[in-house]
Image (tube, rainbow, N blue to C red; front, side, top):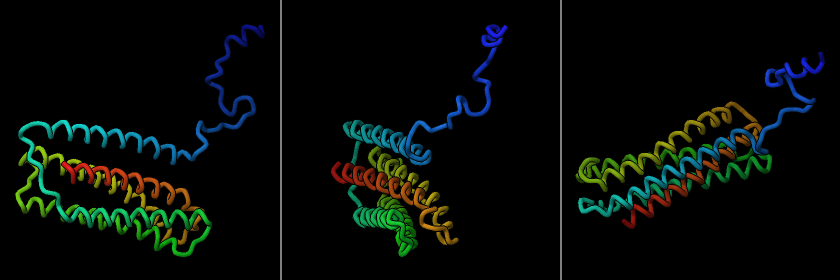
Length: 204
């Protein structure tokens, strides 16, 4: 009878911890960091595919490259400052301190907002000069690549705003450490992506 009972058991329906062991994750890193890393890989593939498509499309005769807007240099500086401020905030929480944390973390987000505002000004300036989205493929790719990057920044700013509200509410640095680390990693990634896009747009 015990043999039949053993064969009839369904271990996948057993609830609780099996074998007296505690459940453990596959990765040592927090789930949020693993998720972000997967997202960054996917985003890298997406930007890479669009960049490859850009180079392939520019070989056709109807491609008319637009002049490089000077505003992009200022915008790039703003995004660099944003990344620097986030790294400053990360260094503060890593040392277990609280002083200047609000200035560093909020400052990083503010410079990112200024970057997006600068991009909007650039788009308006280009349209004022007649470089419309549907004018030619080069214009369409410019708005597509810069717009896609801006959308990723807006997503990061949503997470940043939630962490900022917790910071203003008096949260301790240790409670925000993971959020600040993830924001910093994300901003460094977007800075690298933007520098690559800027180099492509400026030299083609």
